[in-house]
Image (tube, rainbow, N blue to C red):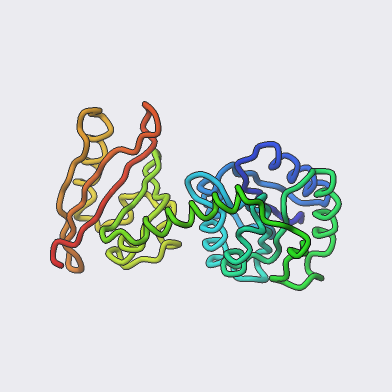
Length: 259
């Protein structure tokens, strides 16, 4: 039976390049074009190998890899980080559970060293980067971008109210530290769940009503309601996430009204 690989990258041509290479090595390949789709694919099947980019929309590679490693311990799933920003994020990679790390470059060169990596899987030492980072140099513009993203993440996690970011299909994409504290959940436990499944049963009807109201009425900036259960009493405020004219999802804020 052929081994199964999942390739997750928002670069269509790179996905096709990796797919062709993996198929030439005998792998059955499943493709995903952003981190959120990658999460869904991980929920649908069992894989032997995961290739994931780091910077992707909606759910980034770090979140995806942490989720994959939690569900599939080392030895069950080999995880390879492939990124054009690898050297700038080397410290993060050491913490998220990837087995191998390679840097994007000219496809001709990548064919050679990725082919060698695939041929030697199981023989190389896990958690030791396949590419010698000492030969790579951070690019200033990319390093500045990573610093900016890290700053934005720090702000997001430091806000003293809970924030949930929900995609247009009503599945959870992001949650800050306060939201996870209020929900008594780890992020890996709620990532890609339908937002109605994140909350207790008694509040779901009001949540669905609020989501529909702000989505249908362009002039309605937000809708709020209260959710109470044995373990929490929260004020929930729902607003629409728009990056243009179309609905891209929702933002939910959560505040503990008992504190």
